Image 1 (cartoon, rainbow, N blue to C red):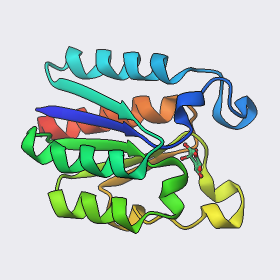
Image 2: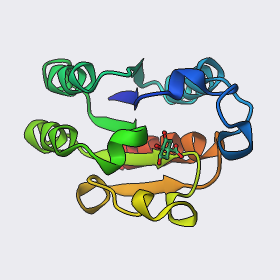
Image 3: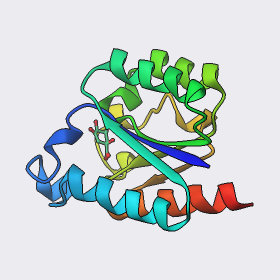
Image 4: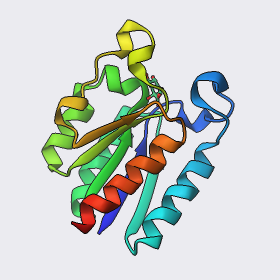
Length: 145
Ligand code: DQA
């Protein structure tokens, strides 16, 4: 099995960016922890962060060719804007888990709508960096069943 972890725009700034909202962990440490979890379960791990919608769409399209079994994605601000990323996930028909560090429902009204949640396998939000840990754990369990 192969798990792909995708991070949307501005998540390269994790650790420095609004630490009261997003915590102090860097993206690098989140990716390293996720890799450890997945490889401990004898599965393949890959990850990508991009500020570009096009690059994320290309990565999702490529996931099909790469035999990715499950995608874990934090679409970041694209959560609330991107029909194109949603369509890419539906096009490849690979199950995905939507992740957020913060709980978007506790924040501005414009964060309450997600273009992903109604087609996601599940949504994990509000636990900071632990959201990723829980989502990856759930991804592994899903693939083991
Ligand atoms: C986020 C929530 C989004 O609303 C925001 O635009 C982000 C990060 C989160 O992980 O909490 O960039 O996806």
